[in-house]
Length: 390
Image 1 (cartoon, rainbow, N blue to C red):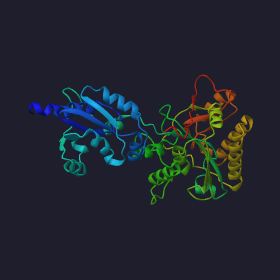
Image 2 (cartoon, rainbow, N blue to C red):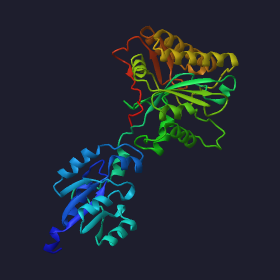
Image 3 (cartoon, rainbow, N blue to C red):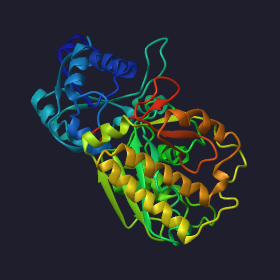
Image 4 (cartoon, one colour):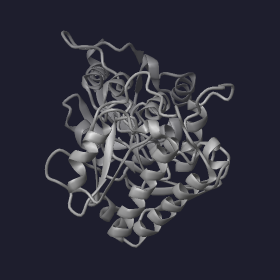
């Protein structure tokens, strides 16, 4: 490289949403060709291309990139799509356009050719003593932000062999992953694990019911003659806030109603909490000995209906009564939900609660309590996921 190359303008472009040592090494190598100018993908472009919110806003990313000593200046790209940087490119008028080898394309090469810009592809090479880094590899190691679901009432009605005896609602709330909940605990972790294969880090900013449908179909093989996970699991994970969904003998509900009222969600968070028990034991069959009749299903669906209206009215007494009746209706149909050890937890916590029920299919896992005041110790508060929280 001769001395005249030092004053050339060099341009690179990217998202830089999880800024890491690989980015810095790339900037360092690119700056060897001249004064380095960086185009940064806008929040809007990243949302459109990757269907997720950014970790850091465009203002924060601009601030961080400008602070790197190898960078002469940086700008937020105002275009859209994969070539969102064209306006920035024409503004900077660089002599050289540098890309990583995995970010190169004939489209970019031809774009440079048409503007008389030298096009250079670099291999990813970490600085001495550092590991090779990429945003993709980092995301794989980051704790998933995918929600869990809490079923409030009507559990089991999403199974056609139950709803064929009487149609009705199931109530679910999508909750933030404030901790890693136990597997086989009634929190729909199996469906959440399936969701992680589609969205490893977080849910995209997309139509929530469509995501729930996608997850339900992804998890359940249409050729599978065995167990089909109920739709309430996918809905509870993907659809924010509090939802009720109506089943009438089919796997997918005929209608869904949502509540995003802040006062109601805040009220619910302050009157329901979780107690960890033990994971459902291997080999445990909660459907063994089931006894499903129209009368028992009617009690389940009637309790779920009352539960919804009590929550909407913020009627704690009515909510607790319907919550308890929903659980009693469940175990009347599926007595194997009450596995050894469950009653001991109920006996221990019932004096501190207005009502209680096991989450999911039961057999262990978490005991949900409805309380006038949430106890200070031994319980887990829930945080209901708001619609704009992703």
